[in-house]
Amino acid sequence: MDKVLYFDCLAGVSGDMTIGALLDLGVDKEVFKEELAKLDIDGYKLKIEEEQEKGITGTDFKVSLEHSHHHFDEDDHHHHPHRNLADIEEIIESSQLSNYVKNLSKDIFREVAEAEAKVHNKPLDQVHFHEVGALDSIIDIVGAAICIEQLNVDQIIVSPLHTGTGFVHCAHGNIPVPAPATLEILDGVPVYSTGIKSELVTPTGAAIAKTLAGEFKPLPEMQIEQVGYGIGDKELEISNLLRVVLGKKKVRLS
Image (cartoon, rainbow, N blue to C red; front, side):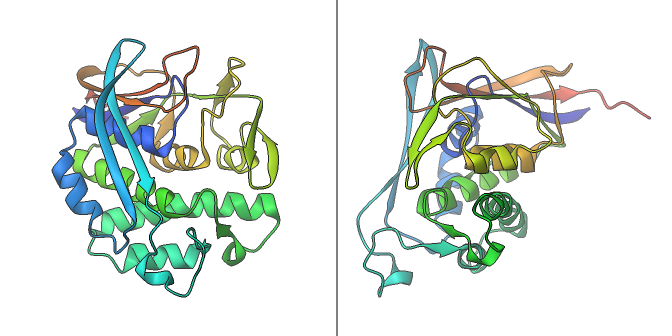
């Protein structure tokens, strides 16, 4: 029997919802924090709390940034220094994290960077992570990789992704939802919209889902063992949750 992790992206997917759901599923919170502390960055606080969304109990994971200077940008007077992919890979590589977590994190980041490069028509090494990429993306992406390593599953299956619609405000002005970078990442991924005017799938969420998914399909035949809920941060007309299901699936011999 294969150990399967299924992502039910009923209200889309983001980095913090992914971590919330996986911690809710049973990833050890202390181990998660210890692993994350291996990244040589500071200036952030984690919030991991049990909360309710439309009557359903789940885990709310949030990263809040403190306005302190991080030790690797003493000469930078901005609170959020711009970093390119090489800077971020260097932060990940120089940590004491396992090779599995390092490689998975870098693969996810590369998805985001390649999409941004295409949208802004820039070479990969000139893409600066300002919105997606500063500190919270590093924590979301590395944190998700830590959780996945802890669960140690044979297969990851992701549902078709529920994207929002409308417009979202960013540094460039009002841009359409899904954001152009998100759509680039979702190339080849099944998506649908029900007309909810909100950014349900973020670039980070899209990159995590695409990198992890062995395949995208509705809930497969499996024996359910555990369920976790990650809570989103916006008030929607539907339950703003990411549901993850851990179970066993018969291995088909081909």
